[in-house]
Amino acid sequence: MAAITPHLSMHIFAKSQPCIMLPALSSSWNQRKNNFLQHFRYTTDVISEENKITVKSLSELSVDVRKIRRLKPWVLSKEMTYVKETAKILQEMGADGSSVAYIFEHCPEAILCSPTDIRYQWDLWLSVCQNEKQLVELIKRFPDSFFTFEHYNNQKANIRFFKDLGLKNTIISRFLTSASSIFYSPVAKNKHMIEILQTNYIELGGSPENMKNWLLKLLSQNPFILLSTPGTFQENLGFLKKKFTDSEVLSLLSKLKGFIFQLNPSKMQNSLSFSRNIFKCSDQELKELIIRCPALLYYAAPVLEERLEQLFKLGISVDQIKETPAVLELSTEIVQYRCKKLDAIGYSLKDGTLEYLNGTKKDFEATYGKLQAKRERPIFNPVAPLNIDE
Figure 1 (cartoon, rainbow, N blue to C red):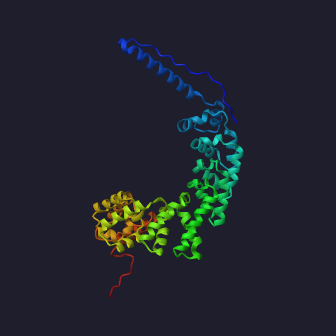
Figure 2: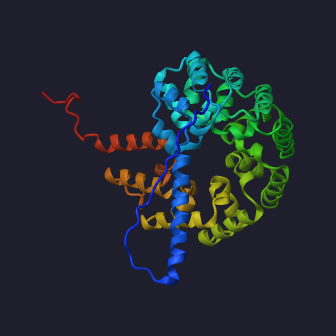
Figure 3: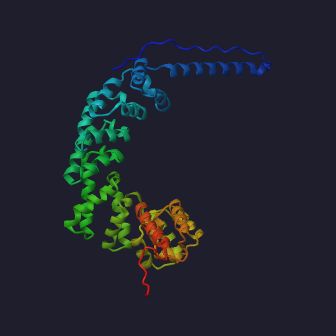
């Protein structure tokens, strides 16, 4: 544990320069000059007010203190720090010297955490990790999530709840790092949200036997649904029920991957009106388009307009988009990149299908590879045996 040491304050003296000044302005100028010098002197004092023992301990661990000064300089001025203690615990987990330095450089607040809190967190996170090696990797990637202890009891209760729900440790550990805020809520709130989802799933005609798989998949895709309020969910669900059948609403809930919680009836209506005007379709045709491409429902009209304009510039027609509406789920950058690759091997989107644009990056690369192999295949195979009449 390091404590702050006294130091000599720096004093800055300004050497006056000869100048000509109007009498009426002389007083105000001197006042502003004095204010500036006082501020500059104070600023210099604050910057130099570092805990020398902390800085020395960090330097001994090969930590680039300059990075901390740029990122969060106030940490270095704290009277109580735990540099050596925290480093020792991380090393006990299996972190090497460079890993410890990296963690401190990217999360300086780690040295302000008490060793007791860190050990409690260690045990808690290890309960959802395969081993300590994986834990160290998680801490390196998400140090801010690990060194947050204000909601420890809620974290512990929610981890137990998610395990009882059937979520695998790999999913829970991913939540701890990429969606840590869902663990800060009381477990009762998360349980209530889960119960609402389960109730609506059954009411919409979902199979009780498949409910657990449906729920776990939804949570895995978008854990932030737990941060929403029941009122928001019920309001959005009510809007969809007016437009679609129960089975269609259930299908949309699955395809929307929890995005329904981020919407509201007004936004959804605007998106529907925009799509109807663009595609010149009936209500039934619009419903079918949305079932095939939920992006028409959850993307705002300006986003859809930008993506459509990009496709039109590439010579793609409205009818082609209607046939493959899922292309609107791709950003303009992705569409542009994929179109260039397809064009390079001689595939024309104007005359062909847009299906080759769709899918994940992995899906597209696989499709592109097949197209490329097909177009590069030689007409004459020199290896094949020739049938020559003797």
